[in-house]
Length: 135
Image (cartoon, rainbow, N blue to C red; front, side):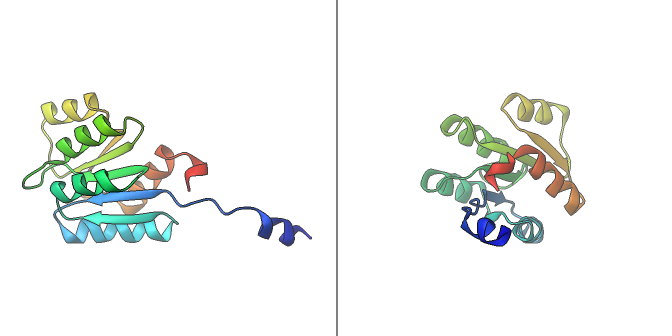
């Protein structure tokens, strides 16, 4: 009887996560870890592609490298927050200056991860940032 009740309960919709990094290996790692954890993941190889996706699709979370050619992760953060103030953002950096990190925090970054990072560290950050009912 319990299994019937469980089957009738609506399944929560997986939170949509946008992963942005010009390094394919980092994009793939993030996507693989988050997909296995039940998140719906869309990837973008550039800040330009991320901004375009953000104008067309809804996301609960953006995970973006800071340093990329063209539109940087900081610009992605600022544009995302300007349009969707409630969106959550995790920035990733291989090397960040104190000024860059301060700008990221002031612009609304929820978390900043330093490369190289452990995949479980990424997953823990995402689980902490997104509400449980969003998964």
